Image (cartoon, rainbow, N blue to C red; front, side, top):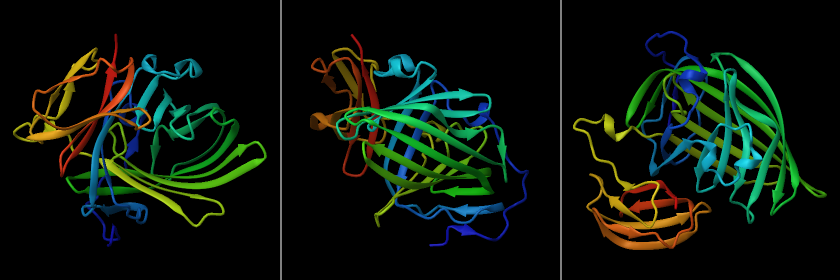
Length: 319
């Protein structure tokens, strides 16, 4: 499947991305779709990247919120943003010159606290085609595993042009390529890993339109690959569609399920932030009330799923 075309697109101005136009902030909601992996294609000026035939798998969303809601905020006093997913809690700083990762709690190996001693510069602002920067970062591991991490990144804006996704097309997109070399040390054991990430940015969109990620552990033949892209928000459709949701959110002892226009009936699963199933109802109808009095205060996920559609929403329990 040909994904990067050499034929020129319509000529447009070379894009520049900025903190105000591309960095997430409190309230940013990332609506994402995962798809089968495809290669990133070539870079260059005025390129067409055609990903219209991505085989879609699952749609999900996550939000950037204030750090006061985090369970590990005391370890990240300078962070201003928190992102909670089934994989853990992730803390960030947004500055005029870039977007930084401060660390987080990872739902791996019984729970790992990763605290950056020198935080990782995920993106530099402003950035345009052929811009390049290098960054080094270090971190410590604690809780289930003790050790340290060192990370060396080279980040290049290696292309710009038109990006075609299954449900939309975007002009003046800047592609940013990150190459990382990571050393993890646990006692006398060390692991070496390489990563390559392609992020496709457009000014005015506060999360990447498309992310393609490959990582490889030294000494292993296995390559971990993933692809996610921006889901077109339902509220842009005409007529507007009602989205599946749970409310109130935060909830106390019960929440209501609104199936919106995507489901006639669906199964409901409540998961903890480690992705473990806490309760499952195989079939509910629109407006069903779900008892959640047994849940301790904190962050959870609610999966609304039919045979063909699955959506994941964060649920907060407060009392």
